[in-house]
Length: 119
Image (cartoon, rainbow, N blue to C red; front, side):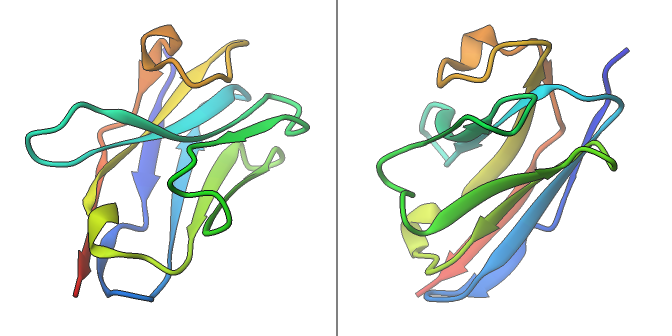
């Protein structure tokens, strides 16, 4: 059973920063997705099991950074220069091998953590 536990969400003013964490029960390829009210869940960033390959959505490039601590089986999403449009529930996802942008390819999901950016 794969367990993913997210933390680090909260309320922040525009221009601020937050760091999300996702602790996994093992070492997996990991992705971050987000879902705003009334919208589909969309890709944010992902990282291969080795940590050597990363992908970012265009909307977060240069502002968000995905990283991992393999000793802790934890993946982080550092979010800087946050804007109100970044407000969403953020989910981490895991797969044995897949680390791309397609949410349907991830087999395991966390419970989500709310990020709210005020203007």
